[in-house]
View: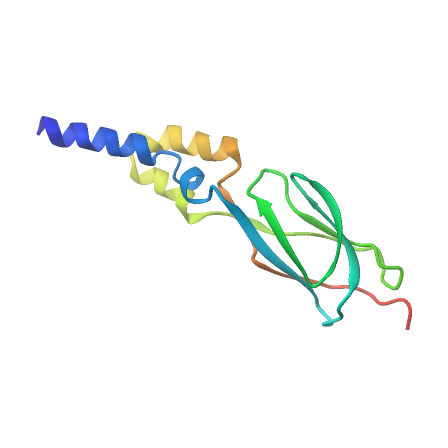
Length: 131
């Protein structure tokens, strides 16, 4: 019995902060124009900075408290901004299953921002003003 309790304590120590472990890498997001136009200039802002791109664009970003914003910068389109939705990842909720992981793991995941998962496909709706 003592071995089982010890094993449970050791396992829960290693799996606390489940989202930080399973979502440690970057996330890839595909951003496309809703009207299927290619080459529309945008500025993408992530937690690591901002950069220029053209739609369709592949965004690679780390999970973060800060969101990801796509702002249209093309002269033929209204300057519309879009914030990419983020949801709490299911691995964050597995902390509830662990007695030790519940308070500690959730704090780790929340503190690192790894509890967030971005939408993987994004449609950028735009208003063409050149036609």
